[in-house]
Image (cartoon, rainbow, N blue to C red; front, side, top):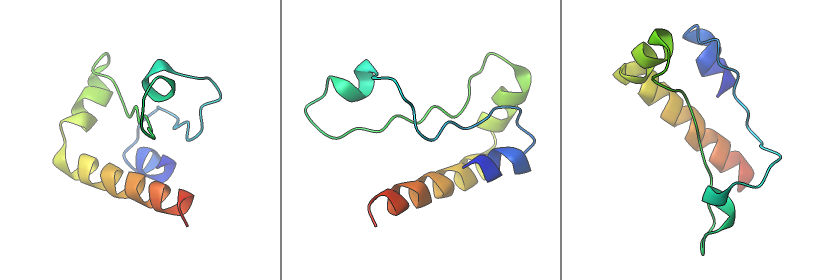
Length: 71
């Protein structure tokens, strides 16, 4: 995923593994993953998040990460 952010010029650094327990992933009855890929709090991230090409690339990278976990 980081390669996608780097290619599109995002200053955001992907954190692929979070070391804290989060309610969204801890207090659930099923397996859960949380992907936070950007926020609309700055213009650059907002532009990326509304770009369909960026979203498609990012989704593809996310799926590859998930596949690697389950291999």
